Image (cartoon, rainbow, N blue to C red):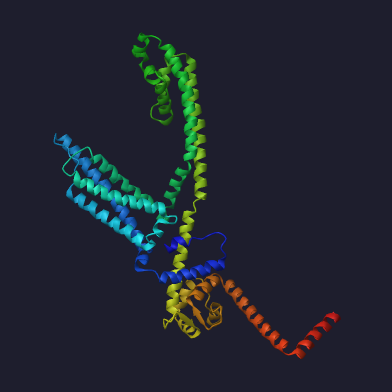
Length: 444
């Protein structure tokens, strides 16, 4: 898309950006119908609505099949997981719409350009999901008279379509908070790995201690089969049971008092050691890990350039469209050029003046504003000159004053250059001027 390819790049001068915007405005007018459709906000909303409706449909279909199977089992009837024909028709419709949406974007970007740029991963994902949809249809038709078995594959393929929801996060600017959460989770994978290592070492060391004590205590068959020792055997009878028990105590899967009570049959030192483990794990490790993840989330939010880029793209695109509409409004004869008469005549319309003011452009002096826009002094303003000039003048009145001063300086310089040429063409005048200048310097 043109909007994607024109993201701001560091190092560009403001003038080059304005020139590129003017070129983009002309390119926008030269877009094909397909490109205009796929570049519109309406198309974006169509794609998002299609993805959401398909996701909701998948959930409703699975819920209906599950409830029907549960009701049949309670009534001692045969359980079936086959879909109703209405669901299959909706599935075909969604597959056709997704294929149409992908084809439109493919045609808009170009057969080769579609697989270039930053969106290649998302485009490949969309293509895979569409292909999965066709495979799903084929398997559904082939297995329509069978139950179980291969229907597990069909369910997995259907759930894969939900992955299309990830595309909304990139496209929609008001999903910034959700995108930040996902970016924070992804950026925390490295920290999570080390957290798992630290906790694993902690569980492993304490599990060896408690399992060794339990094994020494349960040294006979009678001791292991004694009902009084059942809790100790279940919690710390083997190393894997000890690791799982400690993990459940820390994560809330089991009340830690249960494990503590099972250790009461051992010497009191093991009970104190267990309390030390709980204190260290809950108040030290957990809080430190939480701080690490919060810091990672803050860094991810600072590094989120996607929302900034999207905001800049939409703002610039809206401004260019507004400039295009304003230029067409001023160009009464549709010649692609604006004359001073056209400009002054249209500024008498209060709606046009209000439009200029909404774009933060001061139109108090129409003649001076036209001269500022007409950089080459041809008496006519092109679309590129209009966009470039308006962007330079956009802002408070002091920006316009500065441009007026620049124009006057340029005019004075041209006058001085013409005067110098005339004087050089008359040697006597040039000699007298040089002599007067030298005499004045000697007197100083």
